[in-house]
Length: 359
Image (cartoon, rainbow, N blue to C red; front, side, top):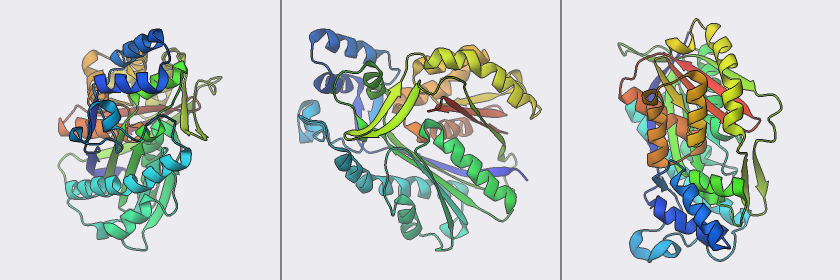
């Protein structure tokens, strides 16, 4: 029995940063020469990101300029311990907000949840924000918990596969999936071309969905399949590692070309096994790792600008919120009654591809 998505909720922190403020921040922590400062400004303009949100931002009246709005990033790079303490402070409130929104959207109370799947790659704590959801929604203490951790931008699709396994094994199951990513905790200091690109893209956000068996909707949104593949010889192209000063993203400039070269053959095989083809897909939820990745996927799958626009719009309005981003795009597609079936695609360290088919 296919799993049905019953409700979706998304949220971002209260305060946001403009592209101009982001460029000023980047120059303060990464540019040691005017030439590097000019390059950083160009990178910010080409990022495809107009606005980002962060749990670290202060209100505008708390100070002039980026120094007053983002005091966490002062003269020296914060330690990993300092960054994780901020995760412990801010992750649970966002998780609770999106979980309540998803439950309300589904028209269900928290007592209906039987399984909880949490997703994050930007913070670690035990007990984690899953315990906050258990105690403050509240959920039944017998709810079965699973955490999908440190899998990168495709983590919510991994979580969706876990949820689908629970529902297909037990038709009475009702799963709450919750992703919280606080990427702004891991800004990189100093000059490193791959990391300054990552600094221009990543942002904070959270998403949740409620899923279960058959729904009463006239046209329920069902998860029909999932897929995964590792691109050979690509393990050095993208990484996410823990250092003394935060989690560091390595994002090679070869990633878009590698995706463009390898995605189409696998995608055709995967869809064909499910009675579909690239041409038969009505809408696409593409994780916007950056504008060049969206361009590469569009080229590989021969997608029109309108098919890529839902993903590009989320990138412009929110930035790359790692695993939470795909839930924002799915919410947008559902809200606009986008043509079905849908394919959700995301990429992560490996270089790996994760996919879900919805219809």
